[in-house]
Image 1 (cartoon, helix red, strand yellow):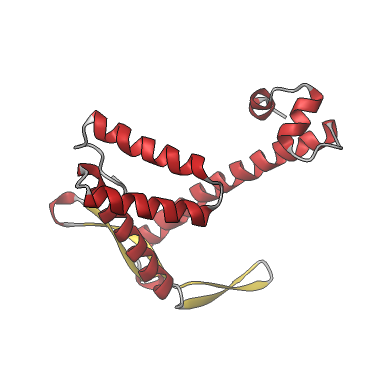
Image 2 (image 1 turned 45 degrees about the horizontal axis):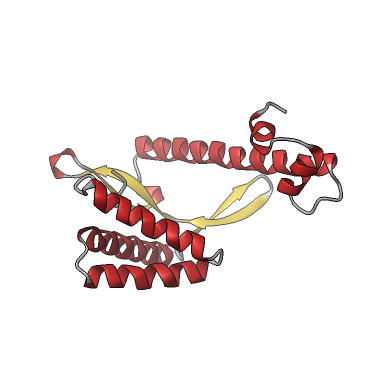
Length: 177
């Protein structure tokens, strides 16, 4: 399980449904991220006070995730200047790596990257390459949406362009270019 994942394994189907319904309601209420967070926070506080079984787990994991982000932000101030492709880049010198914990559990540890073993550094490089493939996929998604502009130049959005051109958006996105 992810170090920040909410463990739903012990939840009843009713608890899972209640939580999913809460999330769906929040997403449907507004498109503004700040408003969604405010609504989620208020609804979660209400659920914790009402002693909903799932609410304390969600609250604890969200709190832990936020705390981890604060520690990461603080450590990210420690920078390394790295020459690459004719530029000098400022990159975080402290990064997270997987470590074996007692009992065989996998955990994470943030540490100066220059003290990592060769194996750990190679694994982190592989992780970055996998992330780059994900990024490339996102760029391909944007490119497929932008290509719709050529089919309907007067359209304001890809969805509108697809409608105007009589193209099924799902088919368009999944079809090889």
